[in-house]
Image (cartoon, rainbow, N blue to C red):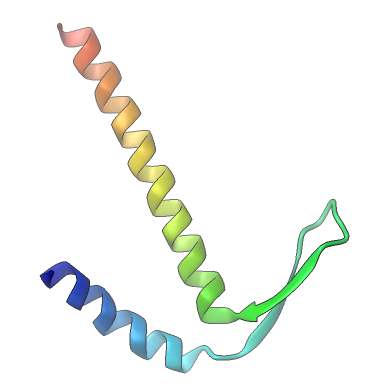
Length: 68
């Protein structure tokens, strides 16, 4: 719960300061989307966090498997 409050303490002012809408284009495709900058940045951080978590779990699993 405390960790969530810390994240919100940083996320709310960040979201208020970055309301500008940006256009995101996916290079090989002709697909584009307009989203607020704060959603883009927090989404990238969330995806990076999930991939980092998965990578650490796989690494720890391999280390535990080799240790047995």
